[in-house]
Amino acid sequence: MDDELKLMKQRDLGNRARTLRENELLKSILEGLKSQYIREWASTDLADEKLREHKYLQLHALMDFWARLNSLINDGKAASAFLDHEAKVKGAA
Image (tube, rainbow, N blue to C red; front, side, top):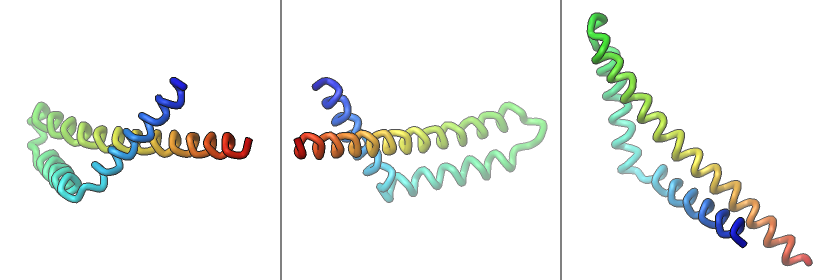
């Protein structure tokens, strides 16, 4: 039962993550930040290594956020598929 509860929580977390990813306001904000970070990173002076590295790290932190969100969504899909399969097996028995 603990495993089933864990999978249900994972499924629900994945659904919440998908809702966030599909939120138009959040997507607009994050795409704006991505464009800003790329523009600022590309326009840094070659001698300003600290600022260039800072902008690079900001961009990658944003990409890490999206990757984590997608990972939660995929984990939720897998948990949902497993729970659905288990429900069918129990129903057939």
